[in-house]
Length: 107
Image 1 (cartoon, rainbow, N blue to C red):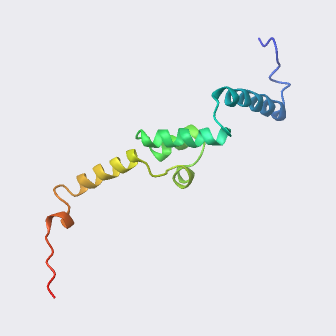
Image 2 (image 1 turned 30 degrees about the vertical axis):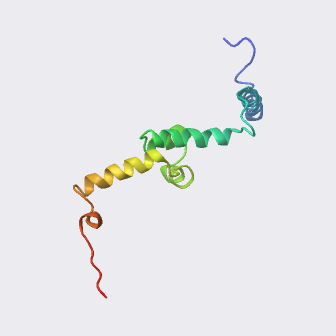
Image 3 (image 1 turned 90 degrees about the vertical axis):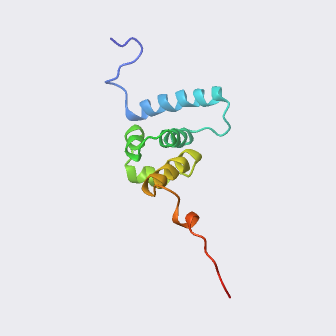
């Protein structure tokens, strides 16, 4: 039972207004300058990816496609670099070719 509102009578515009007012209060209380919903979506996507989540995981949470996640949210960070370095070490077990060969140039 709903005491203060009737979901059947609420329009999209009304729901959007409630969401906007709620978010405005949250942003004001957070103290984050120029806060808006998109800014926090980007932070959430970046955190998911940096903690080892896949493009698909972030897409599922944000309601996007993995392509959009890769295009807009998969920025370079230390965690991503560490994962790529680990992957490359697995692919090239042992020292990298460039590190193991000494090149002598004679003129």
